[in-house]
Length: 190
Image 1: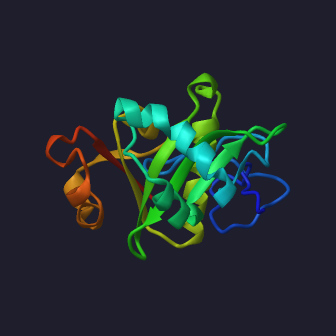
Image 2: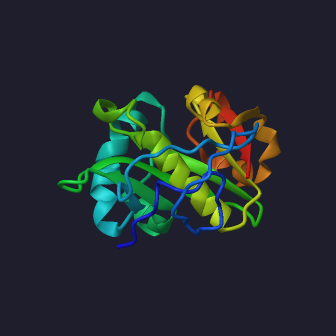
C-alpha cells in the first residue's frame, strides 16, 4: 500500500522531496502547505469501502455530501485517498480527485469524522489531492461545496458552476438536488 506524502517542500508539485523545505508565501490561487506527520494520508483500497460508506453516511443524511453507492466507491476506488489513525488504521477522513480532462479535476467527497475535525486532517486530505493533481499536470481543480470557507482559507477562489460544463454534463444532470442545488463552486489554479 502506497503512503502519500503530506509534508512536502513549499511550492513543490513535481513529486520529489527535498531534505530542507523552502518556504514561500502563498499567492492568490495557490494552497498553503501544512506540516502534518507523514504516513497519515494514503491511497484508499477496496477494503476501505465499508469505512468510507460509514464515514460519509452522516454527511449524506445532512445533504453535505451526495450519496455514493458501494458499487460507485468500488469502481472508482483509485480516485480516493483516506486519512487513517496511525495506531489502528481506522478511517478518519476521505476525499477523491475526479479528473474530467487533461486540464481539470474536481475535489469530491471530502469528509472528516466529526470528532476529529479542526486538527488539520481535512487540509492534509486536500493537500494530498492537490499533489496528485499537480503530478498529473492539471491546470485547475474545483469543488462544489456547502462549506466554501474551508476551501477559501486554503487558497481557492469563488467560481461559477457554469465554468465547469464537464461536471454539469457528467454529474449534475443525474443529481438528486439538480433543481434545488445550494452548492457553491470554488476553484484553484495550479
